[in-house]
Every structure is written in C-alpha cells, then in structure tokens.
Length: 503
Image (cartoon, rainbow, N blue to C red; front, side):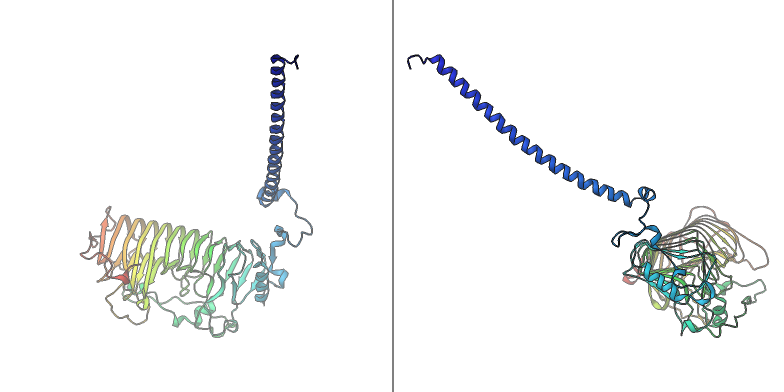
C-alpha cells in the first residue's frame, strides 16, 4: 500500500472511465444497427409491395398490353383478354339472311356480354339481321359495353311481333358507359307504318300558317304504297332506338333510316354524346323525328346529318345543358324546343346552345313551341351561326301550338320564355322570315337578335312580313328584313306569374 501513490490512483481512474465510455458506444452502435436493419427490412417490404402493384398497373395499361401476349388458356379468375370479350351474334345462332328471326340470338349475345365489363357485341358487316322488339337491359350489367354495329338490322314488316303496339323497337335501359358505334344501319321499314296509320298522326301546327300564293292548301305528297306483307300495323308506332335511364352513352358512325316514328331517343339520360351519326327518311314520313331528347342533361350532338319527316332534333321538357353544333338538317321540320306544356303540364328547359347548323328545304329553322295552359319556363337559349336555304319559317316562337286537327281551347297561362338569343342567322325563306307569337299573359322577355339576314327565295309563294306578338327584347344590329314589331325593353310584369312557372 505504501507504493500506491496519488499518481497511480489517477491513472487507474482514467482507465476505468475509458473502458466505461467504450462500452457505452458499443451498446449504442448495437441499438442503431438493430434499428437500421429493422428500417431497411420494412422499406424493402414496402418497395416490394409497390413494385408488385406497379407491375400490375402496367399490365392494365395500353402500352404494356400491346407488348404482352394473352395466355392461350387464362385462369378463370384472370381478366378476359380482348379477344375473349367479343361476342359475335353469329356465334349465338344469328343467320343474318334478312328473313330468319335473329331476335333470340341478339338477346343471348347481350346476356353474355352483360356480365363482362368493356365487352363487345359484334354485329358483322355484309349481313342483314331481322330483329323484333328487344330490350338490352341493366341495371346489373357491367359498364362500358360496346355494341359494334357494322351490319344491318331490319325491323319486321308483319304486325305479329308488335302485338297491340309498342313504344320502342330497340331499347337500351339503365346502363353506364354504353357505346353504339360502327358503319352499320338500323332500318325500321317505316313505310308499312306510315301508310297504315297516317290518318291517326298529329299534324305539325306550323303547316297551318304555310299558305301557297293562290291560298289553297298544299296536298300531302303521296307516301309509298304499303307492303303486301304488312297487314294492318298497330296504331302505336315505336321509336327505332331508345335509351332510358342511362349514363354516359355514345352513338357514333351508324345510320338509322326509315324509322317507324322517332329515330333516336334519349329519355332520363345523363351524359349523352352523338357524333358522325346519320338519319335518313323521306321528308313526308309522318312524325319521324331525327333525335328526341327528354328529361336528359349534359348532351352533345355534333357532326351529324339528319334528314327526316319531322324535327331534326326535338328538345322536350326536363332538358338542360344541351349543345348542338355542326349539324346538317333537311328535309324535316328544323330544330325545335317543344312542344311544351301540353295538357296543362309543367315544362322546364334551360341552357340550350344550337350553333353552326345548315338547314335546307325544311319547314322551320329554329323553333320554340309551347301549348296554351302550360307552366314552367324556357331560359338561356342560344341560336347562332344558322345557315338556312329554302326554309319556310327560319325563326319561330309559337306559344299557341296545337297539333290537333280541330282547334285548341284558348287558355291564359303559358310557359314562360326568357333569354332567347338569335345571332348570325342567314339565308333564304319561302313563306315568312320571323314569326314570334308569345303568350298574352306571359310575354317573351329578353329576346335578342343580332345580324339577321333573311331574303325571299322566290315569288311563287306569298311572302309574309315578320310577325311579333308580346315579344320583348333588343335588336343589336339592323335586320333584313326590318323587324319593327319587336318591343324594345321589358314588359311591366317580366317575372314568372307564380310558383308553377319557376323551375
């Protein structure tokens, strides 16, 4: 003990401190290493999962799909390959000879396609399929089904398949994302219906104010002779192609001709696209509207040719956000909003744009027609860049519409019209350039006209001057002919009469 000095004690204390610090660093290093290994393991696991998902997403993409070959025998749980999702009606027993009834084959093909998302029903070219009344129904069908129509579908000409009468021939109901496309034809064989029930058809009231120069009523042009196969057809005539209660539907490329009544109808639909579409029926075929819209919104119709015996496009109650452009119309009765308010009903139409339209040899150009006694409103309508040629009545508002063979009863209430704009409407007319007949109790308000240039086509018919009644608005440029009958400004009561008139 005598040899232990303070110097030795200090040295030993220093050694103990060094050893203690060393042990602390090793312990911390072990903990950090353990944490790093755990973090790396978790990150690697997440990366692996992300990588698997990324590969799966790429397989669903268009780029990788074209590079990968589908397996010859895919597992039952695997998504179907593009080839396996095509259902050809010929594979379900359709003959396509124009005389065999192929209705059941079409129904079977639909039943199969309905179960697979984005499947395709193929109606091949160079075949003619006789199909009776049929409904391609949801709502339990998968989305985005494609009806590829390259052949021809024809309607029966005998009365048997129609029973006592049906409202539609080919119907698609409660579907999402359906597309009808192709270069094919839907032929309604309408002549057997037109001749059978012509006397029962309502008349377009506009014909009452089209009087030839000698004041004699023009005779109805003769219709084709009824087919000997038809017999007496039901008095109720069907629409050729109807969509009901559907979302995001598209019709493109096809032609509908000789429809029994209306060619193409959308009822209670949201999101409608029609383009590169054709309608072809004689100008004297009764009540054969080209496209009929009812209770539908967010509608786009463009780049189409419509020739028929009634309105090229008919916009009925419940329609909003409708945009129509680059359409050829004629023969026919023009593009119409209405008739609205029939049988004292309420009608609501708003936000309608019709522009860049060519009309030739039509009864009307752009028209709004409402019945006396109705309620509701038409607001926010734009007609612009309309070229008319040999059109009897290019600009029409008729709030005294009546398609009865006898006169209609006078009533005080009417559908309220406001915010109707006409811009850049030019061309030739054969009877009267402008006819604006508004309700006595609910005058038309905010009617504007800009750059209207309408000239008579010929002197063979009596040319009427522009006519206005209870029409209030503004002229933003001189018109040809002068429109002195428009009342500038607003009426003393320029609001809807009550709750029934608001929408």
